[in-house]
Image 1 (cartoon, rainbow, N blue to C red):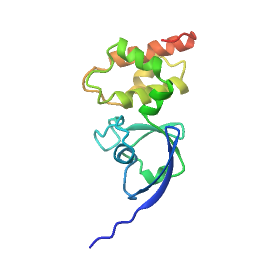
Image 2: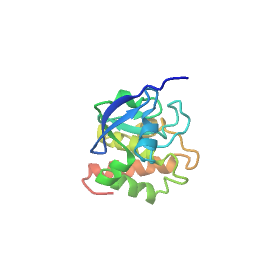
Image 3: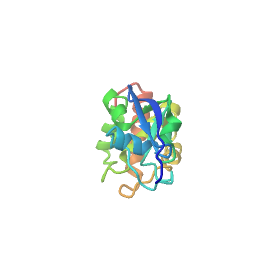
Image 4: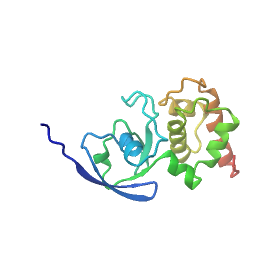
Length: 164
């Protein structure tokens, strides 16, 4: 009979303190989806390539399929649900809708998480820099043009101090 070992983790997720028992091999995205019911981040490739599982840990985006929940013990984790609730990405979400930059929606949470970090860290990014930044997230529906258009619109409007 195999013995199951669990470890206690304390993580602040979307501003809410969480203390849970997890298997040491549980990935952060699985913990968020299965233990906390936060289904916005998706499992795609499970190799850190597609970006569908992207979440923010201590202010930096990470691949939730490559990060173990125990590695996030004591960390502050933000998911797409949290960014949506706070209104942090309201202009970005509106631009994605205007540009039809989300179709099936599977990649949208990862795209929005990546775009949000770009807007914060590179507010003067060029279109080419946006394309390069967003290239770490796969989308099988849009062809990326609409996604880049939406992000560039928000960059321009934020530089002008206007809500997109």
